[in-house]
Image (cartoon, rainbow, N blue to C red; front, side, top):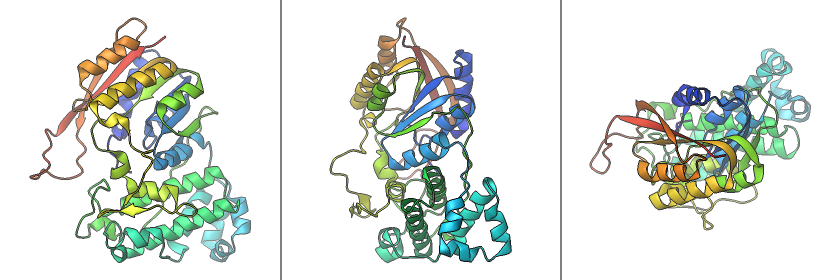
Length: 371
């Protein structure tokens, strides 16, 4: 998924730092998990991970890529869904679905992508031309509606368990993002159709990572989770760096993740933002004062022996303030820093209202021993 702050390209840098510090696999808390790529990689390296974030789409990725251990068999689904059984009249499809593991998962994704009849639901009503917005073509919006509705039905009826549900829902979030008519975030849609937006929604699942058992996912504030999970070897913090609220920049993935089956979201404005009267998806990390306070509170709440903080050279919290907080919390009053330069993620081009400072940024990875 296209995502501000995604650490996929920086994973080797992060893991090299963990190794150089002599931190062996143990228990880790991946705070502000986002798309869960760091938690997934830590799990693959032998860590038992507790991941947390306040966004529902992040929770979906955590469940699919950090908690799930293996691809489900889909035995109940094969037996219980009459429409799926009709699709199994195709010998090739029946053979694929009958195989356990990746073959069955790919067959279910093929069924959802190509066999379901599109239906006009919440996404088509609000985020496609029929609803006055151009995030998705009408056809793709109706396909997203049909897939999301079918996943909800399968899960509610017990035809797929939690692992299968979240693995398939994560595949839908990523498939929808690939055909979204945006520059990479959902703060606005493009006024003409981009080539990717004209392609059909196609679910391509990623397989779960087999790693240490006992990893957990948390749809909650990092400080609250830190106070609940107890002692861990490593706290990894990758907070928002700037003033842009992820709730606004990724409101459509959030809608798809939550669904609209019992609590219908209220949308507003030109871009169809979700109304959040309780403010539960607004992050205090998106301002300099809020970020400093949040970091102090999280370090006070955790029982981690070590902390790693990912930040960058244009973050809202300047380095002096960040190092002061870390030094205050460190057992020896000192923190250290690892630096890696990388190419900036651009959601759009330079224009009169938005000029990027430079093409390159420095990823700053800070370490402190807490206890």
